[in-house]
Image (cartoon, rainbow, N blue to C red; front, side, top):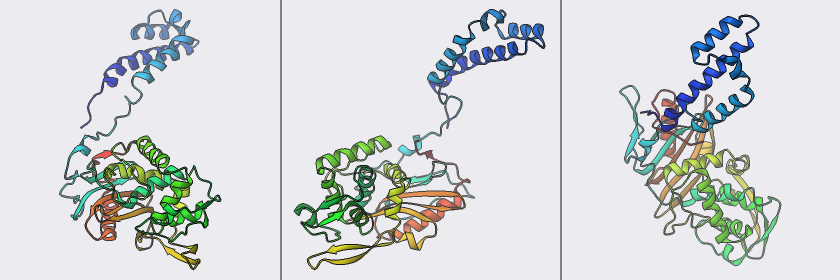
Length: 354
């Protein structure tokens, strides 16, 4: 439900005053046509001596406008109530005609219309959960503008020895930052994540910047501890926060350039120094029509995680989920299908902040 705010209560009288002054001012401009009528109407509005009032309109009207904007900047535009997002379980305003989202064994998810910002449904949207490699989306939007793509980086031992998913960079060899971006966002390479963080000045600096980026996006429940997303105590995000991070990533032209690529030839991999064709772990790019970009993730603790967006008929649906036991692509397909089917029909449960 929408409720009156303090700014509504304060703003309404000021709006009335401004309207009165504005109306009298307009009538004053018409004075040459109906001077007596204008004076009479101004007196009715409560400003009988409109001539003396308008003598000061150069200062008074701007002052009232500033006060009005300061005290009720959104009083004339009601905002969607986000209080439902604090609930647990499945949150949706479904009806007999509009079905609820598909059932799935997943800890948290969110479905939103990225075109309007409306959140269509969610499950445990504020539950803090491990992000797995979806945190690489935050790594990317934090560092993309900080690292020159043509810059060369010499791999350190700590980069090359990073465990988990790897592209196979070798200590002492040089790679461009752009090559490392492809390695990060296609095969989700942890060694590339370490290399990019060290190219930025080291892990402490990069992690600090990632957390600053998260907070600036409104993802206040996200805590990054690594640039790669491997299970680490205290490293968490939420389905709601991941939507804000995912939106920022998908709206970034450079991120889309890398994350949309289905394959890439990565140079000089391993001891044999061979070029290696790497594939994107986001199979939705080829299996679901209209997918724009996204990021996958999986660890033993986090299970399957994902954020992504797809476009259809002028609308863009954004989905996020955390803790899916199995069937990442199947779940993504179901959530996309449901989002497109109900958008514009279902009552939203909230709205992504601007």
